Length: 628
Image (cartoon, rainbow, N blue to C red; front, side, top):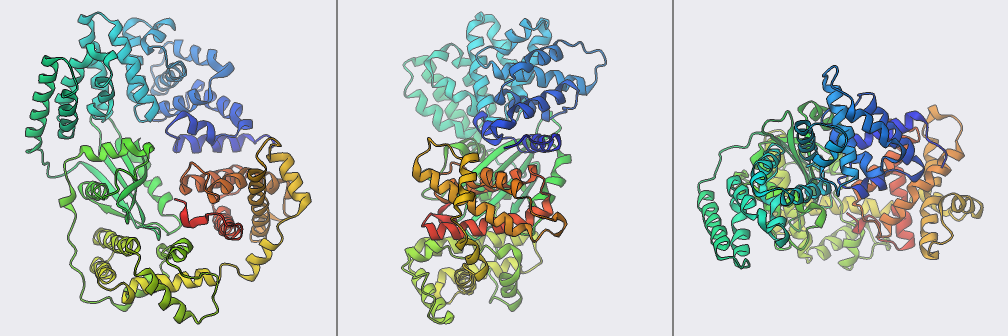
């Protein structure tokens, strides 16, 4: 791929700073190899010029350390060693970002030692090192990794020096809004840190989280030191006892719940006030309403000024509408999602920290409102379900139909007959019945807080209908009729014509020369080329819907087809490690970096994904039906 313009590099950096991956591997995957040096240099320039401000200092350091400082290390050293001549916040943030980058890049070295090597005096070295720890706790591998670094440094200190240093470390942990058990449990499970166990257990006790009680009791049974084991048991008993009275009436902050989509997934945002910090502790979690588990999630720091723009972006296309809910209701919804039978088995490792944050709260499931079902579903509600953009995705997947024995490709029978027979077949699928009921229940709560009066009772009635008689339920019928339309029109003449054009040997040769390694497995090579060629054709067709663009730039879309075709192939062939939202964001980011604005993306991306799903059907790949 040709070199990106300066404007495109700036756009990439802005996207990374706004939504940074949570680990180093994610950062490296988000930046094309040929762009690494440009992005690296751009980040360094922002730090050196004082254009990095909180909370982006830690974010910039995380990104830059993940990419490596390379030949820019000395520039960062000079920023750290610069005196506070003007004492401005920008200068302080620049020094923090520079020092944090160097500390994270050399994560085997205790930050205070590095600070002293760079010429900082003792007090400033400690302050800078602890600020790095505090600032980077929001990044999973960074925060937890630095805990072990500090723990090792504490072991190297004389016993009399350990306690004050640990107290400072723990104050930073508290200011960052993280539970003691989350960071310290692994240390108490490792004999190497036994000299620190007393301090760590005291911090866990002081944190007062009753959910640490069961773990402490279990750990006490494994420890061979009678005094220490007894201490653990007493703390466990204390946490259980105090936990009985720990029922705060409210949580300080705000929360949003988004409407759920047709696959039964819903996103909850929780923003809680952080002590001593001008920011919220944010949790973003995606629940699978049918199975009752978390699908994805992350935690971050969010400044209040950022929330308005963030919400606007989420709601921009009308497919998602956020309802303002009390934080305790949002937490209660998340907790209820973790009470399903397969909650633990279905939880991916990368959302473990989010799950533990949710479990830390007292039980808020009783805060969920009880919505009384309406006596019947009115015509207005049914029309909303049929035409509102947020319900466009409320269809049954092709895979669900096939698993129930429904012949998708045979559409010779009348629509009414097909719909009735398909509903009857799905009525015997317990998971589908449970999912639809859970979706309508969730929407009843969503409407209770976010829609006009009465819609909550309408959704509650829809949920009751599904569970009482799936075959005659309004929701089953509306979704199946929309599904028939989707299946019946999947291969319109226009879409079919575009797919029939695939197989151009000259185009595939050019794509292969630019984007495919000859060492790749032949099957993977061919599937990648299929989706790259599809991407080229879909973008070529979409270009004609952009009148301001003029003549088609075949070179541009040929380059772009290579960078977005491969992640599409990995997603639709079931080999992607990323959930669909992350893949779609990556694709949109690539197209935006190539010069397409938001309005153009709204034209191109949906068509691209629809054609990719059609190609998956033709190839026999998993398509949208089985990817999350």
